[in-house]
Image (cartoon, rainbow, N blue to C red; front, side, top):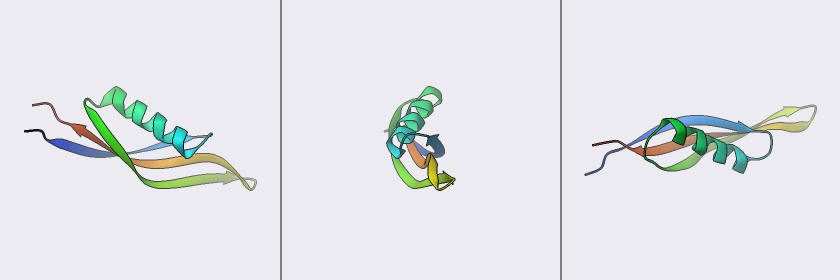
Length: 67
């Protein structure tokens, strides 16, 4: 039997939401073992002088706990 846990992280990028998501999953995988998936909970942008300066995603990362 496997038991999984979900943790929430926030990641950002100056390029895109997709890049922020990829960076967030990659970084979570460095710390958490057995990352199995993630879903985007929310997306936000920061704006400077009328232009998007940063894309942010709130990710729910699922990982399987060791037996």
